[in-house]
Length: 319
Ligand code: MN
Ligand code: MN
Image (tube, rainbow, N blue to C red; front, top):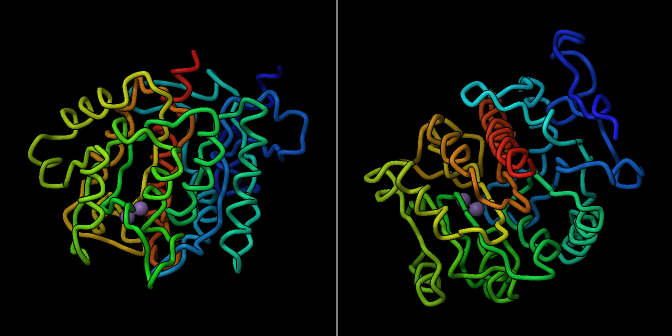
């Protein structure tokens, strides 16, 4: 165990605009590297958006998010947590997808995460579109169905698109429930809003007991109260955290394919992730950051800032 190996490069030693941009300036440890066994939380890029039904681009997310993440420093500004001193973190590189074959990509992704689980590494992933979560869950939920806290403006619980297409970024959690990867009574979806084709997704949620907290309820109650309920729903059950950047208002985070107005501001977007204290996070993702729609780069920076909030909580739980 070499603590110094897993430290991010400080901006005091090498200016933050210089060097090869890994996630949060951490060392790159490929999955073949024996040092994988020393990693507690692995940051993973999943550059894949073949499940996108409308405006594509999240395949470019991980590269942009790595660059933006060089702005992240070692210590949390509010809590003072220094995650890289509590656990070993590393950039595990990108999962290699097959952009022209959804089934092959999903098999590759699940196989990649299987290697992390075998090495006792908890993954924190930068997507990719939201279909990414399904093959990750197929790996993480092999031994038991997981709880899930899901931030999104969409439920992603639809049955199918385009006449029977089952694998899109609008359907991953419908498949995950069908495949027994999630325990529906321990799943909460926060921030749901926008126009829709119909209510088929919400009807499904109700029928299996998934708790949906729509945006009007989020704003009426405030994030503290909503997150207290979310923590209660998942309890101490092993929990996946899935964070679609379109949860955040598009005035703040325009760089995404399916924006919906009326979402949380940037402070609330970070606070809900900070409020995950005490949740047993076995894996997490931040998905749907789409650089082609992110002219200023603000969305990518918010995405990696959310990843840092989640990482701080994963570090606190491990200690
Ligand atoms: Mn989504
Ligand atoms: Mn969404």
